[in-house]
Amino acid sequence: MITSMTGFGRRQGTYAETTVTIEVRSVNHRFLETSIRLPKSMGGMEEFFKKTVQQHCARGRVDLTVALQGGRGNGRLPQFDENLIKHYCQNLRTLQRTLKLKGSIDIALLAGLRDVIVLSDQAADDPKLVKFIQQLGAKAVGDMAAMRKKEGGLLAKDLLDRLACVQTSKTAISNRAPSVAQETFDRMKLRVEKLLGDAIPDLPRLNQELATYADRCDITEELVRLDAHMVQFGQAVQHSEPVGKTLDFLLQEMGREVNTIGSKANDSAIAAEVVRMKAELERLREQVQNVE
Image 1 (cartoon, rainbow, N blue to C red):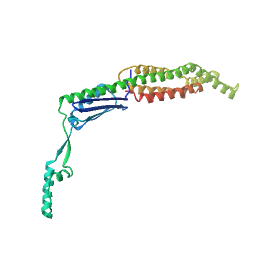
Image 2 (image 1 turned 90 degrees about the vertical axis):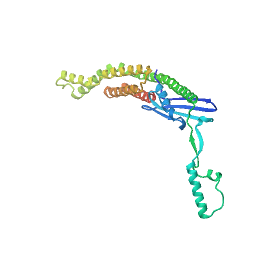
Image 3 (image 1 turned 60 degrees about the vertical axis):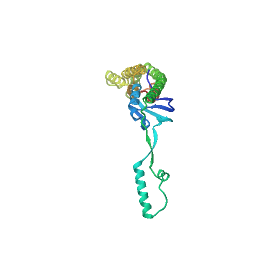
Image 4 (image 1 turned 120 degrees about the vertical axis):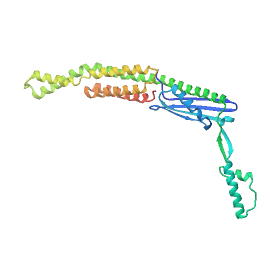
């Protein structure tokens, strides 16, 4: 069964007083585009998450976010910039001597100066924490993939229902089509007879020309091709591999045949069914944009 490109997965767990929260979101995209947002201390795990996503998804934009809270795993430690402090201290002493200022230069004064204290990222060097995060991330991605499959099942049902509506209109057109050419022939012949009366110079030649004109209204080939595209579409919906682009192409071909049928048939009953088919094909096209 087909798979949707929309999904969401979220997992949260605690390891050594560190709370790990992982969220995975997937939306429509022409190709597979993965965005991984990690704490700087976990930059080395980006490739792991990308490969994990690739194992489950072939198309779509996937955003994966990892957040750490509490414990050493949050990767944020305060540090003093010693070189900057030394420069501050030297400049303050020089200024104090130059201006003959009183007072002492202590740690409280230096700590309040700009950029003296910075938050640095601590590497996530605990192998057990890294493994815990990877396992939790794999579960979150699995949850997202499961949602994509579940929504894909609903999409497949809707696509097949709408395809059945197109098939109903196509059957009605097929039943009507054989009489269109004959009616066109009879209608044109009646008009010619009204114009010329009994003065028709070459009746066999006239019948031949009228038959040729009426044959232009024949839509048998278009109906055969439309039916073939619909069969392929229905089969593709049942596949488990990515078929979104295939379905989109088939819809384009179906739309082309329907347009040709409407322009060639020149019949009010067929035109009404063509309008219905176009409406359903447009709805199908909107739904297919979400198929992987």
